[in-house]
Structures are given as structure tokens and as C-alpha cells.
Image (cartoon, rainbow, N blue to C red; front, side, top):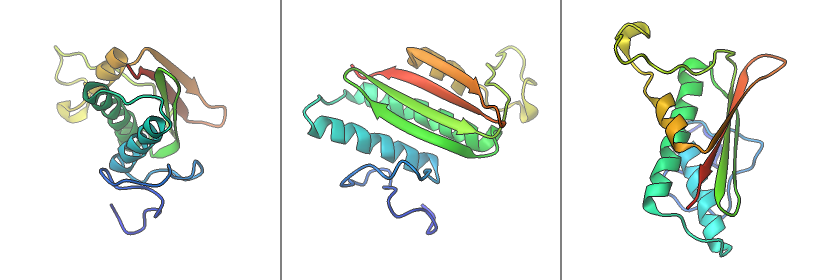
Length: 150
């Protein structure tokens, strides 16, 4: 993690007393994943149940995909919100682009410049129980996914 990252963002496998302030944005996908771990740890500490390793892996994969895509294709992350309810987690990632995610055509390697990427969105669609895409009035978009915690 860079030295200019907010000190309230935990590192990937670091315990934190409380989730970072909602007003700051994680500087990296690793910090976003650490925040999710922290939210889930606090949920467990409140007696709301721990998630399985498989569920945690799926959630972290989705967070990584959404966050990385916002950095790579969306001109930066403008919003990051995570909440855990009784049996589901909601993750919202916003960016500056109005381009919606696209699924790669697996038979055409020229779908994207350099023939790279395009495989994360199908994973997000497979793992999420609900997806909401919103184009913001002032530009940009936000993607909210709901993921099962059981």
C-alpha cells in the first residue's frame, strides 16, 4: 500500500478495530478487499454468523473485479460502499465512465484492445443475486451487487 493511503484503510490481512470511515475511498483493490473482510469480521463479532471460506472468496472476487474495472476502465473509483445484512452483502462501486460493463465474446480475441480482459463481468453476474447499474446525472455510473452470505 502506498504511503499516501489513508491510515484508516487496513491492509489486506490486517485486523482493524472498526471499518474505515465511509467518507474515504480505498486507494487499491487490496484495501477494498480488506474493508470487506473488516465489515464481515464486525458482523461475526456482533453474533450475526461467520461466512464460509467459499462465500468469502466469492465476495472478494466480486469486489476485486468491480474495483479494478473502475480503476482500469472507469477513470477511477468515485464511490465505494459495503453493507452486510442478515443473509446478504451489498457492494457499490462508482466510477467516472458512462460505459456499461461488457461481456467478452469468447470466440473473438479482438473484442478488446490487446485481446485482454472481459472475463470478470460474467463472474460478477454469476455470483451476484442482484445487480443494479445506474448512470449518474452528472456523469459516471455506479454498480451495486447483492451477494449471498450463506
